[in-house]
Length: 228
Length: 218
Image 1 (tube, rainbow over the protein chains, first blue to last red):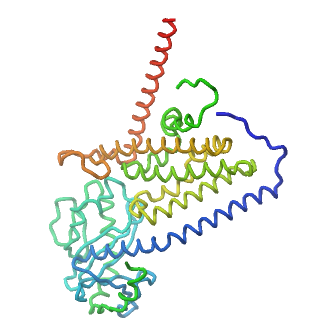
Image 2: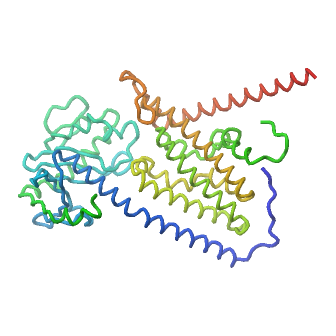
Image 3: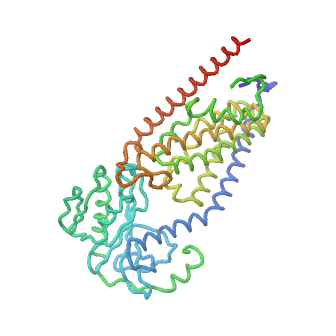
């Protein structure tokens, strides 16, 4: 490696240094804005599609959905691009517009980082009908089985949620509200269950009323942009 | 590799990153992504491609602008350039390959802190012409990617019994879960370094032997 450096005749003044860094920062900023704007629509569309697929997955038979918000008394329909908060959830409907169930998202601490869970809830049967992990950073090979292990995910396909879900050692599942935990990832399994129990404690009673009807308009208005 | 003249050609600069000065096996740089994201061959390749893009782009710019970057602030300017390329790679992956982006998570933005990249700017790109800097960057980035892939494929094959998600063995294979956990990364890296150094040593001995024989024949 050669060490022939083009030696500077004299040290550059501080004005030169400030100017260099400002120009570099300015150009960098322009590039960042460009890439942000260029990818924004695709990223938003990816997220919307991912959520839509997740809702369809946790609620078998669902082909249409709408965003709902609990306003203190009842559930009101929101436009699909409305902001999410702890009072929003999704209603799932079949092709004829008949109500099937709610998809509820909740997040909580896992073994390493926040786990974000979406589950399907059938208020008539008061049962969970499916679950999907939206986001997690659990240990590869162990904790990531909460979404990679089909047998674990299938635990939640027909699960009584009351009084609460309990994770038990694999193979000892006896009652309808128990699930088989993953061997070697008990903390991750229990975290998933705790997140669901918390969500159910919050939503359980609020969802006992008549579900809101599917508003066709919402679906049509958003067909062109966010939901593809 | 015996160099007959002191001046390396652009081709030499390209090749040195692959073996003689391999950033991972010889310089032992960039260990954080090396150990963290090599739990599958796919992750390793995506990380390798992102690093390739950042290193080649940064080296090109740093080399082209080397006369205008004042020495006292050169590191800051390099970091600005590298960080810009990293963010571009980050957003592009998020838009085009959201699944891969999810797997690599925090390690994509952390390419900024990969000392291998900053090291190439300071040690090479800032002192050489664009052509040589590009060759050096392509060689080093390919060497890095090869090393990532070597580690990732070994860990995925042993840890999950798969390569690129395709099952290699029957159902009877019990995966060595430890291989995709952090200790597996250290074990595999250690063994690969051992093999690499052993091969290098053998090669040196062989070349010395050949030289001796030639000297004897004369």
